[in-house]
Image (cartoon, rainbow, N blue to C red; front, side, top):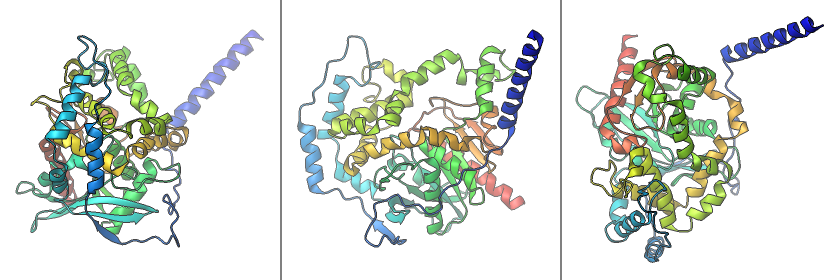
Length: 459
């Protein structure tokens, strides 16, 4: 009887392993998505208006006066701890310096005019007014369309230094016709009024946007949430996406998890090459870093309205919440600096550009709805979609920036991207690559697209 029991356990384990192996090696189907949902408020008649209307960023004098009045109130701050630098977050001295710059040196009207140098538009898709800007390619140049998508806590503001490099590239390169939308619930794009609007739903809206503009086939690029949205688009709509380029590599498959764990105990080179070791290991340090940096994501994935209400009451609260991410995500070393690096001339992003981004959140009243995107994408419903395990077979370009929170080696990325055209490790830059190192993003993106275009001509 004892032997029978042992054999029963062995058989059960064998069946379980076989089932797991089969599930791991079986390509899942793309989940069904309602092709014609309605995410916005029901309007009289609720017939969708498919027109494309010009839009100008024009903050009212009342809204600007209200912002200035709130900034003039003395902030209630707690003095920082001795010798803590910025390890506890943005300290009181840095907050005061940022607010002083905001009040006395920053000119919203001047910055607003800069944001309006590109034409902006709105169009209604699935019940939501979607905002986007359009940066046209240089006249007389061969061009291809590109959909360029931001992340959190960013916005379309991220791309203003990058856009001229894409639309007016060096001779010999194809130029890009860039469509840069705001994710629904961010900036000037209307927020969904019901639950369930996640990455797949965003991918469908963005596909409809490009088709409405007359683009049946196009390239896509993004970082942060933008990287995940465009990867979903390339996975779900390979017949429409000519190529996908990301500056954050979103790979979350069973094979990657196994390699990550195996590489932590096996000698370098067997699973993870020696040159890639510092991307992932020591694993304990990496996990500790993720735990330290991802606390905001847990809050936003569980109680976005609570924290949203808190930071939405005061522009200083909103600014501190956002600039801390700009500090740490450009380089974790900034935590050791008293000013979090933000006030240094060597900081890779100007304080005015960061304030542009913050003002977009403030004037559009969108911080809470932007936080809800975490709740929609970090839940059981979203995880069971398992789109991450569906291969992406369109040409892929991966730009790896050294200060990004987490980078995957090329053999890890290959579990998701089956046609990696380029995997380039950049010499500098972090999470906000388009703002920090626009020239590097432009060069890598243009080289990728020119390579793919060249392959198409050969075939």
